[in-house]
Length: 400
Ligand code: KIV
Ligand code: ZN
Image (cartoon, rainbow, N blue to C red):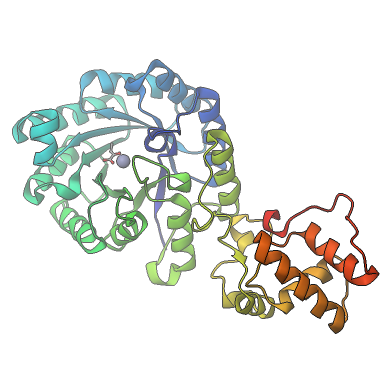
């Protein structure tokens, strides 16, 4: 089975977005975790952006040897030199050179002609390749570029020595069909460069980043650029955990694998939230607080009988410690009985009926029924008075 390489850009594209900036120590902490996670390439930063970023890339390159370390540079001499300097200590460095190829960016942002851009790409990739074993070229805004021109530019990059060609959907504008078609055209055009690896880099402005990344894999991309928790510019990048889990759960459909240790996904996600102080929404796929939580009675009943009824992946597989049956106003008696059992209270039918009545009344007012609430209820039912349990305030909702 072919491997799709995971290129993590949490420390570059992710770190670039508001509220996510990290210092050198924090980046190093995350880089060590990404290495443990099995990420193939860690994009550690954009060294020309600041001396701090250059130092962080250098520190990561000096310490992290299990993953390849990449540094970003615009197709300009000063950028490329800064990236090369930062990558000096790396055993497996990758220089990542980019230049926009859409007319919109060329005319309004860069104010250069197509010919000038083509020339800049060829020169900087060639210069970089003479100083670094591996060069990736990214055609920024590829998905909104004139296809014929885009093909000309990536051919120039491949000829100059780029062995990875990245076609970003920089503004998250593409649809899966369009994005896949662009990769098919690019692969056909570069058939004379069989060792070139094509890479997808998708933003989530229309919520399609993961779908577009999967479409690119279908079309032959063998590197996907993504971030932990899907952080990144504006609406974020394709989320690493979603791509990796999709390829695992639907392996029969995609016929590719990754080197990601799925069991480390949850702890990596948690490390990022604790370092940045930005939590993930509860309904976030794979790592959100509700991703494996069940409150509705019908769902809880199914889960108690066979977890596959409402879960497509075992939570432990992605490192989520506990399956969570959340008790709320939609919960059923079976879930209540199961939780009381787990808390050490075997209930009679009559006790259960009374507990259920009181738990639902509580849930109406307080939304969730925590273990503390439940213990108080069962004690009240059994003794006819309320007893506050000692130090047993572990909410079911907070169990993971
Ligand atoms: O979104 C984008 O185009 C980028 C490139 C620099 C790779 O982040
Ligand atoms: Zn990006």
